[in-house]
Amino acid sequence: MARISRYYDVNRDEAGHRVLEVKVTGFPLLHLPLLNKSTAFTDEERRLLGLEGLLPSGVSTLDDQKARAYARFQEQGTDLEKHAYLRNLQDYNEVLFFALLEEHVEEMLPIIYTPTVGEAVRLFSRLYRYPRGFALSSRNVARASELLRNLHQEDVRMIVATDSSAILGIGDQGFGGMAISIGKLSLYTAAGGVGPDKTLPVELDVGTGRQDLIDDPLYLGERHARLTGAEYDDFIEQFVRAVQTRYPKAIIQWEDFSKDTAFRVLEKYRKVIPSFNDDIQGTGAVTLAGVLRACALKGERLRDQVIVVHGAGAGGAGVAAALRDGLGREGLSPDEVARRVFVLDSRGLLTDDRSMEEYKRALATPRALTQGWRGTDLLSVVREARATVLLGLSGQGGIFSEEVVRAAAANTPRPVVFPLSNPTANTEALPEDILRWSAGQAIVATGSPFPEVEFEGQTHRIGQGNNAFVFPGLGFAAVLTRASEITDTMVAEAAYALADYTASAWPERTYPPTHALREASRAVALRVARQAITEGVAREPKVLGLDDEGLSAFIERRFWRPKYLPYRTAPGAGPDL
Ligand SMILES: NC(=O)c1ccc[n+]([C@@H]2O[C@H](COP(=O)([O-])OP(=O)(O)OC[C@H]3O[C@@H](n4cnc5c(N)ncnc54)[C@H](O)[C@@H]3O)[C@@H](O)[C@H]2O)c1
Ligand SMILES: O=C(O)C[C@H](O)C(=O)O
Ligand SMILES: [Mn+2]
Image (cartoon, rainbow, N blue to C red):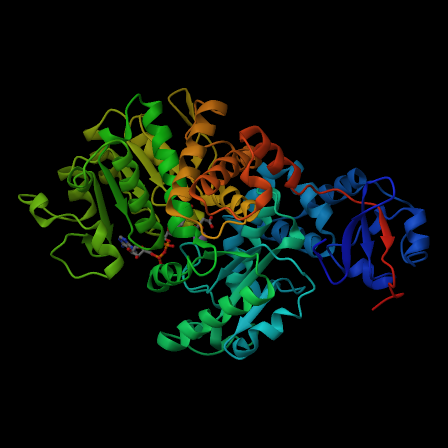
């Protein structure tokens, strides 16, 4: 049996039930978040594990503990305090943290994830309390393999790694990006079924371009400019090689790399180690899914739309590529596709006669198409191209102005407007404004959560178009099938799986409600796993011969759930560390 951790393993008892065999007892056992049941240790476990006298005599159930923790959660004054409270709980007792999250996912998702996680990133060095994850820096990267051996986990399967160069829409955050890696992995466990013992958040601390961080005496990261060029490339290379050695079954999700590194790192490593870029590919898939749903809601097809993507970084380019692919699948030729998707960066429309970064070239509009246009700024493009779909990935709060939204509404009875930038302050337009400017006709989804909008007696639900609906299922499928590679077709399958799931379970909506995140992720995981098997990239022998029912049952069985297992000591366990 594969070992799970230096401190424990899961085994079967005589009756065949799962039991956790600990190699640590006494006080340290109460300080390992993956092992600590705190007040839920039974009297017998307390006796056996040297815990008597270390805990109050009352024994709580997990439900009691949840009730206690939820009451404390509610007493926290601000969202940031709630975030800190939940993060402390996670670092104290992970089963309890995930059990609580499971019960209150709609309420707690915006606290552990977007938008509050953005504040936690900004204030990371100030909020810091307990160690979590793996911090690689320019100072220690040469010894990456050796340092990975300091981690107690023996079988990490899912890594989220950031270099913090473009966190959400708030830019370079130095070491603080670690909070994003942690938040994404919490969703992997809560929604994607990957056990917390199999996840590893990573901060690739290559320095920061922020002088204010370098000058901050409390800053916890490396105090030097970002590595670039060969130094940067070597850093990533050493990280990847070390992961391959220590955790050969691991998958990497690249997160919040700025456009300057995101495409390069993805392309260099996607065939070296199973990996994907969440901002490029996850966002592409989630946006395609939402636009497909929006089209269905208005009784049209994707191929009928003219799409403007505002922002051409990792997110924008990924979204444009996914929509182009979607249009191709509906039968449009490459020429026709080029007339349907218009991408803008900070200098306006990408046209093929312009200078631009290499990765943008494939998304550029032929100059000839813009003949006679009055301009190539956002408003002009919406007007001249007669855009029906407006997708915001520029991180520029408020840039979808009244004029822009009205221009889109003039092109079609039901414009689709998705301001997808995070966190909340970076949203390109507020849902209530979009609905007002479009006389209640727009179909709106946002990257950060927004409450529903009442407009002229109608209630409009605002879907959350966030890659959270894609990455947990996509990554989980790759883990379960031990995919050798995460292919573009697997990512596309995630988009169609999400759209189909939403159509059947939430037919009135663009995206499922967040309390259905886990169900949505399972639907995504099933289809992606099937695609991996069909394409021959699945390496897990147990999934190869399975039909859909068998595959679904396999996913269900492997889905980690927060509950306490009975404990016993492993043979040879010491009294403490
Ligand atoms: N909803 C989601 O799931 C999701 C996923 C990924 C990214 N995003 C959001 O997209 C935004 C960008 O993220 P990214 O990862 O692409 O960052 P990035 O740094 O890779 O790219 C940012 C891009 O924004 C564009 N931009 C900047 N100023 C602009 C302006 N004034 N006009 C037009 N374009 C401008 C540029 O093209 C730039 O390349 C962020 O706010 C992020 O939160 C949302
Ligand atoms: O983190 C999110 O909420 C989504 C996305 O990955 C982003 O960078 O904005
Ligand atoms: Mn991101």
